Amino acid sequence: MKIFILSFLCTFITFSAVSQTKFDNAVRLFDSGRIAQSKPLFLEAVKEDPNKAEAYYYLGILAINNDYDGAIDYLKKAVDLNGAAAKYHFMLGNAYGVKAQRAGLLSKFGAASNCKEQYLIAVSLDPKYTDARGNLMEYYLQAPGIIGGSVEKAEAEADTIKTYDLYAGYLAEARVRKYQKQKAQETECYIKAISTDPKKLDAYCPLWFFYMDESNGIKADELFKKAAATVDKKSDLYYWCGLYYVWNSKFSKARDMFEVALKKDSLNYPVYYQLGTVDLLMPGDLYRGLAYFEKYMNAPQIKNSPGPEYAYWRMGMIYEKLGKIDSSRSAYRKSLDLNPDLEDAKKALEKLN
Image 1 (tube, helix red, strand yellow):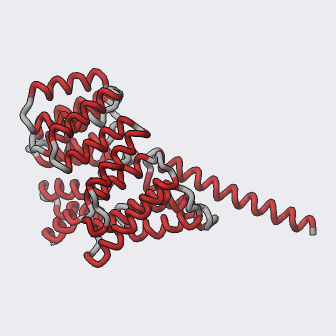
Image 2 (cartoon, rainbow, N blue to C red):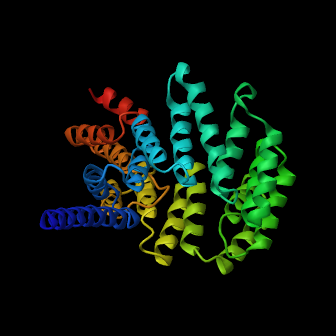
């Protein structure tokens, strides 16, 4: 009997160790930007250990943009297994938020209410969780009053964020002032944030955008020079300024900014996506644009950067311009395989068909 018990324990320990190894490898892939490669390992981890809440959490993150209902299921499982983890409730709130934005009218209000509920739970579990407070603030700004929207509550959240992180608090207040169309107060918040921590980029960019929109070239130039001399992430400074020029259809200036961004950091992979976009949208080298997108596709995926479905959609547009209709159709289909709700790719494929 003792031999049997020992044998069982050894088998169990070995089994758990294998599951943990798969999970650890999945996390390493996820953290390094190898998102697609991480998912099968997370799925294997939960198959071998159905009580691994953290694996369900990562699976929820992976699904949130392309399959919000699947993300909700994964994250509810994580919450059921460990309801004390504030980040699980926060991410579940995000999944409900995506559903509220994209779902049909009958589902919107229920999803929105669930979104707010999860954010409230997250901040009750961890009052210093400023990301959750920031999203709760945004909910109060965006939601109709009938389901809890309130500018006053948004202002209160911004004030609370300040007590835990002054820099983040000024950015949160700037968001509220922007919503209220109080331009002078909004810009003052950015200036205060920069004074709080001059090395952080986050406040420079919206303030520079504001000066550019106001055609205040002197202040824009002064701010840009200060940022270029001070911020830690100089490549990102040029990247975001390049994006501003893309948004305003000034593609030549955008290219100049993106090229400097790459000189500052050749591993700033989202820049390759934007350079491909510039080649697509302005008279340029379409084959070079394809090369940029392919480089982007083969690079680690950076958080908050365009997903591969967008790169395939852009590549489809380039192939269409080149008259390579079969390649264009294939690229649009790959885009929709990754994200069936990407309307731009849908319309482009329907047009070809």
